[in-house]
Amino acid sequence: MYWEDVDWCTTGLEVGYKSAYNYQAVIRHKYGSSSQNTFKMYYLNRNRLYFMKKHTAGMKYLKFLSYFVPFILFETTYQLIRKSDSQMAKAHFYALLDGFRLAKNPIKRF
Image (cartoon, rainbow, N blue to C red):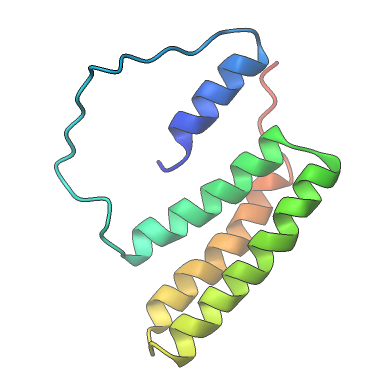
């Protein structure tokens, strides 16, 4: 959930598959993507961190972390202080922690 489609396509590209798309295809979602809730924010940020660890290395990964970690810490602080939303602050903070836990041993299939 969140980033699984990008992970799937990237993994395929890494082992030699090619991606294609149909520009005439129509996808309808039952729920809007603009909704902001703690469940969504947690998994979106946790899986983003996991994806980057799984598919990048070295300076590229460090560059990502130099942006991502301060961003999440800022969001956590912003949600807590300016919005008084402790649940959303927890979602951001635990996404960061759990993302690092997952990223310690990413699944290497190939």
